[in-house]
Length: 170
Image (cartoon, rainbow, N blue to C red):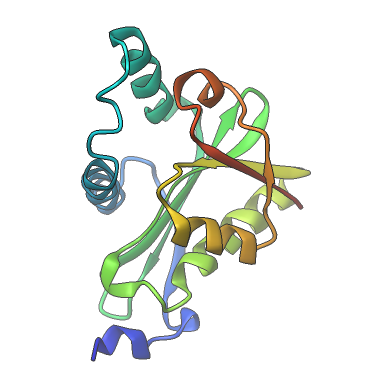
């Protein structure tokens, strides 16, 4: 039995951290590796121009990052991550990840709620996000948190048209 599943969302400490925090960089790198495996072969049929568009969609300019939140397990291990960025005047959720050993504890939802509270306190009326079409567990969490599916928006419409996009009124 995974002892981490005995933890509850309240057992994790959620903190705002700088984008360049090394723990944030590490968890984002782990997410990139996991997504590379999950989406292996998905770029094979794309033209070189389409690959460039797709890669641009997946990159995040640190200058556009508004804030980053992380959740830490009682032992200090990075458990979950989310960042908010300005995307064409919208508050966009990016790089939502829960470390595999903490999935099922509710910590992903907890870090997302911290992002919602932060954005709402600063006047955001809604938040948007994009995820890939091979992430059913992410879609389940977003739906549980009150996100509704919306049409795929730019640049994902051009660069990653099989995306799934969502919005949540705050």
